[in-house]
Length: 225
Ligand code: NI
Ligand code: MN
Image (cartoon, rainbow, N blue to C red; front, side, top):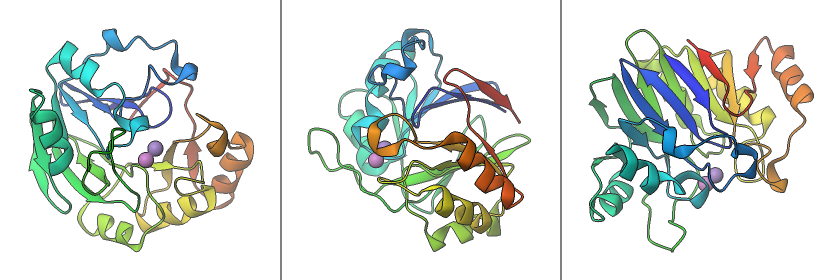
């Protein structure tokens, strides 16, 4: 499994021979100006919730690629009614796709579309790939529900928001990584705008002091699991 960071909460995942884009917000992020969304490959687009900083480039990428948009029922229906391919899910449910198994799990946040359309309840995704399992938390507060994840899935990587203000901060993300029993963390949802700027060195050290590895990728950088 290869994971590429496209800035903010946007990710590319290569798994089982398929390309997945998660929460594409690239053209609206000046820091991601080096990424050409028209060159992105996607068989699937996973959307955690409907906020603009997670859905901005969904339609462009879906038009370019014919990707299947996977999200909660309300978001999937919203895109389905516009003619896009979509797959609706809801909390606690899993589906076996051709690249692996995806479960939609709880997040504590909100989820309206930028135009005010109801975007269902926000979530995160647990992806069980061929060899590796990851949890993408989406925008969320720290929640006890995270403790349910390792009861079913042994994680190799957890992707957590760490920017504070709209989501968890670093301290809560450390607790979240305890809850999901995974010491390898990719941080996201930081630095994009003023409210969520973080001190990188201090954040990495705080995780390190608890025996955990926080990775902060450059935009466009990838890791291989
Ligand atoms: Ni949000
Ligand atoms: Mn967000």
